[in-house]
Image 1 (spheres, rainbow, N blue to C red):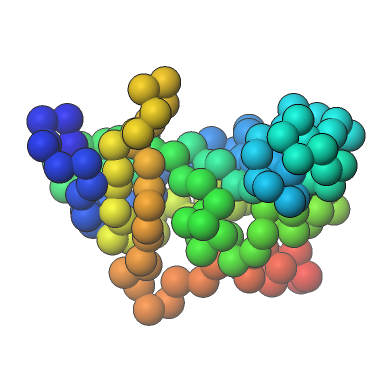
Image 2 (image 1 turned 120 degrees about the horizontal axis):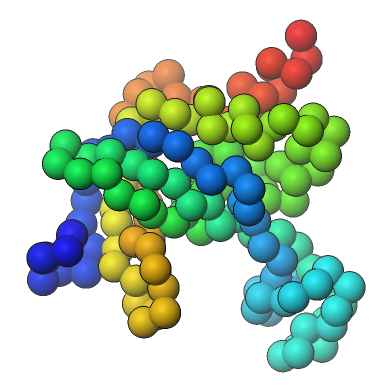
Length: 150
C-alpha cells in the first residue's frame, strides 16, 4: 500500500498474530467519544455511562508482504462474534482467553479491505472490512465457549 495512489485496497491475507495485551478501550456509551477512565464523566456530553470497543493490533500476511494493521470495533466484532464488553467479561472468568484468541485466529484467511490512516498521527493501516474465506470459519467466542466448557 505504500506506493498506491488509492486510499483503500482489498487483499487476501492470513492472520499471523494478534496483540492480546491491549484489545479494547473505553468510550462514552452515549456519544462514543473516548474516555480516560471508566468512572469519569464524558467531557463532551457529560454522561457517566461507558462501554468498551475493540481496538486490535494484528500482523497479517498478504502474498507479497507482512503488515501490521489495526481492527476497530466493527471488524473485530465479526472476528470475535461478540461485543468488547462481552469478551472482556468472558476473559475475566477465563484468564487465558486473550492468548487463546490468538491461537484460534492464527492462520485464518480473509479478504480484507485495508485503508490508509486518515489521521496524520495514526501509525497503522486500518482494516475496514474482513470477509472469511473459509466456510468453516467460526467467531472466536464460539470456539472459546466450547474449549472452556470441556
